[in-house]
Image (cartoon, rainbow over all chains, first blue to last red; front, top):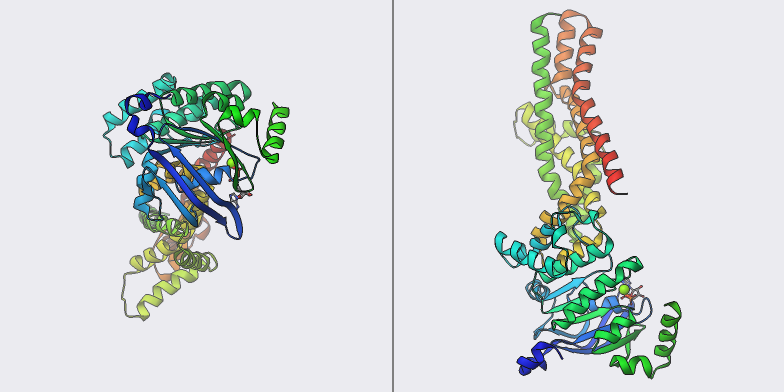
Length: 258
Length: 213
Ligand SMILES: Nc1ncnc2c1ncn2[C@@H]1O[C@H](COP(=O)(O)OP(=O)(O)O)[C@@H](O)[C@H]1O
Ligand SMILES: [Mg+2]
């Protein structure tokens, strides 16, 4: 499927992310219970489920925006602990795109993309600029490089956010409802960018309710409810033949809305 | 009022400005420390700084100056009036600026910190390059407002014998027996400094309100 699985078969089976028996508590509230998930290099996972089911919490544990209390998370073979050096080295490998874009409003598009490579990878200014231009071009927004985020549309901002994450040359990309805050006419440009990434072999976990996207690019669709993984299947099977009652109800609700 | 008397007032003005600048710069530097400590996530540090801020916001500036001036003398530190007064103003300003900036740091959306963290930015670059520039912008109107208060507050330094603008006015007035004229001029001098600052603060506030819509 992906280019790397053809040229480097030994990498195709490499596990990029593994979560075993992960539990996450917000005080006395159990947000994740017994999460077991393994994502191989180049795999594309779509994570869906009702609001409050723990989708954001799950992917935010992977780059330690949230701490987890039980179980183990490995990213690229490294055990994610509470040690800041471990957290930082894992964050260098894991890019994240947020629902609200979270671009830095006081910096230009170019500066948004150059900041982290310079400050956390130690790239020089020229090198960081070259990288930034490369990825801004890839998300087709290079001509806006000198503008500030507020001067761009939502779709453009989200594409910049994707480019900013890519500038760190991550091995995994996490997307948390990247199109939910967008006007309908801008959803496609962001999804197309994500599809392009998927075609290039990026390992991706996407929280999204865009079922067309899931059908097109996902290797597996995971359905969560109440902090647990309820069902996990390739998209064809997931949509046509869901096994659990809650999945069926969720899919019914989603289809009614769209 | 003669030329010499007016020059004497200007000399006083020089000390008023000097004291304000010292209080603002030293208070600004340690106020930044206070603000960072207040937002550090370390409960002990946050509690201590909260207490410090409460103490200095809950007592009159004049009393703070007395305590520093006589307190330091009492424990055997014989300091120049201007050093003692500078210390007093620095402590005062760092409590107020620390609280203003703490509020501004908290007002920067949480997503900014999260985006910076997700990009593997550690505390120092995260604060310096992402959070503080935005917090500073948010805090500018309040910061300038406090600076105006600080300038006017320097008149209290006269009580402990420091000859700034108000004290200079007092001395001249006692010499030439024209208090209304002298203090009229003194008031004008304060106004000339404070009013443009206030205007600038209001201007920034308005600009900020329109740009965040
Ligand atoms: N910071 C937090 N503190 C307390 N509870 C939280 C926090 N963040 C999320 N939760 C709770 O955890 C559950 C899962 O939230 P989340 O992962 O955001 O769900 P989803 O992304 O699937 O909508 C929800 O019930 C939510 O209220
Ligand atoms: Mg969510």
